[in-house]
Figure (cartoon, rainbow, N blue to C red):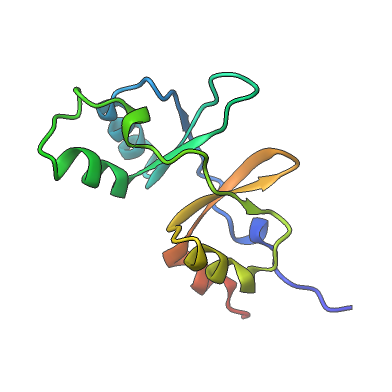
Length: 130
């Protein structure tokens, strides 16, 4: 039986959450302090979906339109619902899945919980067999 690396094997454990009502300044400060490129947006209730905010979202939604970090809330620029990658997915399919959905960074989901993040620019190198 052939064994293969799974998405969860290459996922970063650097996964941090923020409230959608937080200012983009709060998001930037958290990203900077944790050295991450994305934050998961907390659900407002059980029927809600998680969102995601990335550095690219901040550039497109705040910096390019020449707004301040304090006048924009995270929920205004986030992507929701967040696209997640199944933890058991063979890593050779992860880059294709992300490319097909135009996703650059995504959480890895296992049993309904997020367990890590995969960045498109890193997943290719991490999925290559040693």
